[in-house]
Image (tube, rainbow, N blue to C red; front, side, top):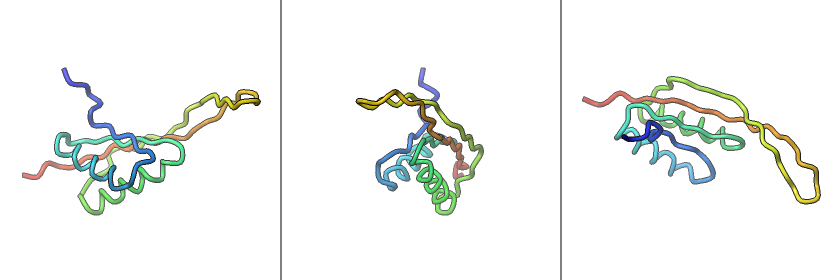
Length: 97
């Protein structure tokens, strides 16, 4: 049985165009794609969705935002708890007939 999360794209440090291509490829197999990111990459995922809306007729179904708590450890310093923002955007595209 195939995993359900095969339509999830984690957006990070790669080039913008690679995520655009990955999203388009996912739409060949799935009607819905989930784009996720956290920290400084949240603006990149929003930009990707906006371009997909304008150029490829994608619609936004759901947006989830939140934050995660991490313990940051640096040599010679006390461990410090930090929070990192995250975003998840669910987009869909109608199959062309």
